[in-house]
Image: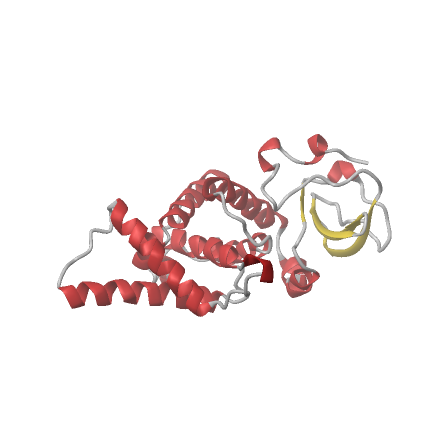
Length: 253
């Protein structure tokens, strides 16, 4: 039951987050709310989004494929368990908005992302978009300059996400929010379980840049290609220091 064309727009194909359900019956496992359910697709646990798809969903019942709008599969069941309470409380429209931003970002960045970014970003948007526009937390970010120059691609994606939000919700968020969205992409790239690890990596990389400037008494031109290459090397060095890498296989030597 169900083909790719029925379920997902072509631009979502191959991004690694969203995919077409396989041929056959898809069964409901758990209802998070009326619009989000956990399902079994030929033995694979998937999170399914659709307006009203959970309204009459019971454990073991067949899913109405005509209601399916988005599907994604977490890399591990642990990710599903971690976000269970969040999914239950998340309004459906924020999941769709987050998935649109993630689809756009992954296509632009051409990187592998932890699929849990969709839920984490949706949860973030659900809070951010209900805050007063003059809320202090929206007006500034302590990592704003570091993210802009150490992760320029992700920062650009965050800025483009603000345009998507403006088009979808008619809300213009300040540039500091682009940093927050960029941090979600960075965290998903690193596959870091905690955002605090991402903060630490960016903070240390930024400190290294400032130490170099102070030691040599110069101001690095952060708009040049040479700086982008250098900051990329520093960033990767910090990542290797903070996040232990698995040893290479024996046959790699």
